[in-house]
Length: 367
Image (tube, rainbow, N blue to C red; front, top):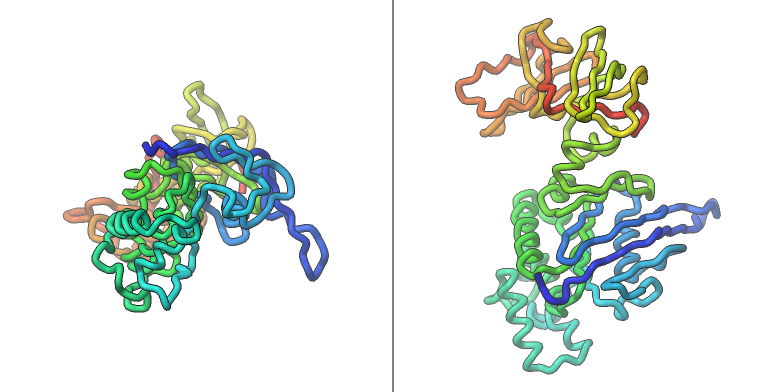
């Protein structure tokens, strides 16, 4: 871990705007309260307008909170300008200067800080090597691909050696393959430096593949914080379950609770078992049973919890996605290692069942 790795702490941060048309108050962020540990990469994930970018901008000093405190390395930076706190931001738009070379773009922050020419040259070369652009320092940004331009923007932020790296949807302008490559590179660089980082995205794949922890937001509120596998496998609400991954929902009634966190439910008169339950699931209350595609199975009609018609089979190489129209809506079943397996043809009638070890019960109305 880098010597300058520091924690970032938000204490009950809120941000309120005044709508210029209606004059009504808009609560962009409500009582955000969490800590990013030194050297950790935490992602703010949520739909447009959920408050994730506003939260990141308050950490970077580009927005001031209406209330609460922000501490970086234990220092209160709540009302300091961006240049008064040890952060660097990689924005959605690369913001490169077209009239400057790649090296001069990367060096810009160091020149503003009046770093010597010799040290600037050393640090620029190191930063460009780090992002795989060591031989392109003399080239103009206009002669680079989108992925290369994003690497320059990343190098420009890293070269000033910030205590905290902030990334605001930095991959949204890249195509799918470049996004995949760049998120792997960002993860490698962040971990090699041990730098504390906050990342904003609405892309759940980015959040899951990059993060040590994910903060899921909606309507300005934090809905859940946890490691990627926790928010995916053990979400607390219907909203979180649906936002972080593909899922099928079945309406059930809770019939019993077990000490190990498991849950017994009734689904269409059938007694089913779920290995886990979220807080708020209570006996005698209606609830929602969630099942991920990999927990679902396709069988003969009448053998499972719901019958339906296969509407599409999508071959993905290592798996087949089987879409089945049921009275609970369209359900996606993931069939792994399809070679040699019998795949129900489109238009056929099948049933859907689930692996009880991999499903979870959520309180009704937790969206």
